[in-house]
Length: 395
Image 1: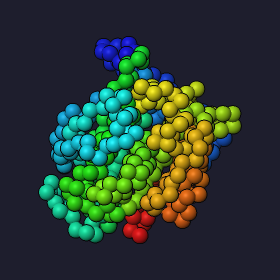
Image 2: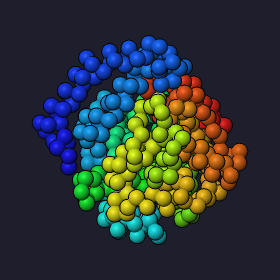
Image 3: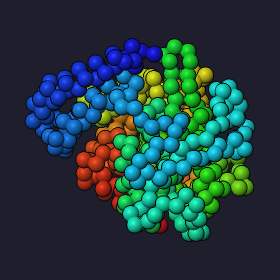
Image 4: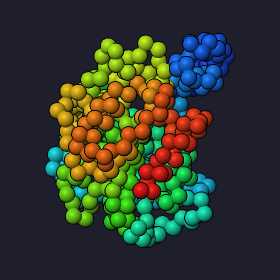
């Protein structure tokens, strides 16, 4: 692994970088953001422009050092105040066909995983709670490029789950599975590559249906960024395999979905290579707003060509014949107008709409950055979007 992944080099570099951000970069960002025409988006306020610059730098730092902060993972159930955690059994009995063969190739093990419940204010947590036939639940799959962040309620991305459970008055509970993150040693070895995350997502869904007793049509699968990719893969898998006791969910919420891990949308004039970087993600030669580390970690034994040929990995790849979205449940897709991934989201939108018609609802927030819903300072767009989700869930 890179030198900066190891202590004390990691700590020294992080401290030096944070000092440079506070004392050198922030003053510079303020100066270049004073003229409105110099801001990444003229509609942004000066504070928003500076925050976007700062977050972009932080995300780069997070990648360079293999994570600034240590996050909870699948190895332990992390306890804490108002943390409602449970252990979830594997669902090996529901893994078959080509996905099972890929599991064997990638040496995927079937293990128990932590899962965390988010409970609406005024409700109490009960691990043995039995839902009624009308109880709705949101099943959340967090983002992070398949290599970072966590299902834990204290995670930075957990603000999405907290926001949904706050605004959706028709939902009392939300569940998030701690799926295994992919890793790469920067040489030849990968840990937990595809389809590990999909196998874990199946386990969490099976827990809701066959252990908790939720009616599948009352389960709404929500994912942001890479989590939205995973939500689509889970739904595709359930539709293709038609398990009588594990039917597909009743709805999908796709927030800023990252659905092209190939290079197909990286070309002159695309949103992936903007003249002025107006997103918190950084364009690279390897993909729109992504890093080679994320892509290589997730692909595992396969090579980059798998990202162009597998609808479970890149359903919006331009190199892939349009995959079918027939019989997909009703879907709400949310996108930001300033995202590097904007073009791939439009491809996904068009492909889904062709098969789903009015069952796909698209909601775009002008000049919004990637995953803006997880940023509590991104107002009023964040709250407006959460209320859009709540209104859609109520239908």
